[in-house]
Amino acid sequence: MFTGIIQTIGQIECVSPLGEDVKLNINCAGLGMQDVKTGDSIAVNGVCLTAVNFNNTHFEAHVSKETLSVTAGLNKPQAVNLEKALRLNDRLGGHLVSGHVDGVGEVVLFEALGDCWKLDIRAPHAISKYIAVKGSIGVNGVSLTVNTITADVFSINLIPHTLENTTLNLLQAGSLVNLEVDQIARYVERMTLWAQEY
Image (cartoon, rainbow, N blue to C red):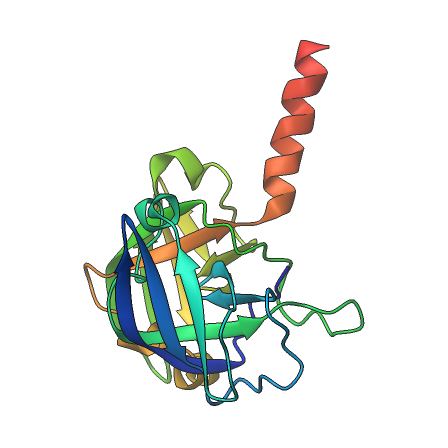
C-alpha cells in the first residue's frame, strides 16, 4: 500500500528481456534503501514492483508480460516516480494507493495557467465511472485531485511543488500515464451491485 506522495525521482537505467518478461535496473539514489528488505514493494510510476538485488543506489525488479500489457512506461529507460510502501505509523499525506493500475490514460492537454499547469487526461471508458470531481486519482503514482470531468476526460491542476518533485513535468499531449482510481469507488459499486443481486 502507498500514499501517492512521491519520495524521489529515479531512473530506469536498463531494461533486460527475460523471455516475455523484463528485468528493470532502477537508479533510486534519492530513495534511501537502508530500511528496505528483499521482497519489499516499491511503486514505480504507480506500479507496485518487488525490489530484489538492491544496494543504496539501485534495485532490480522483475516485470511480467501481464503487467507490461496493462501499464505504461516500464519498457524503456526513463525517469520514474518512486515511493516505498506505506508503514502503519506513516502519515497518509495523499490517499490510499494499491499500486495496481486500473488503466492507461492519454494526456490530451498540458498547459500553463499562471504558476500552475492544467493537465487533461482521457481515461479508458471502463474506469471513467470511478472518477469524480474533488475525488482522488493516482497518475503515474502521484496522488492528485480531480477538478472537472467531462465524458472520459478529467482535468487536474498541478502546483509548482508537484511539478518540481515528480516526473509529471515531462508530460505532453499524447503521453501515456498509469491511472489508479480511488479504491472507495470500486467498493461502493460492488456493494451496490451485491445489494441489487441479493
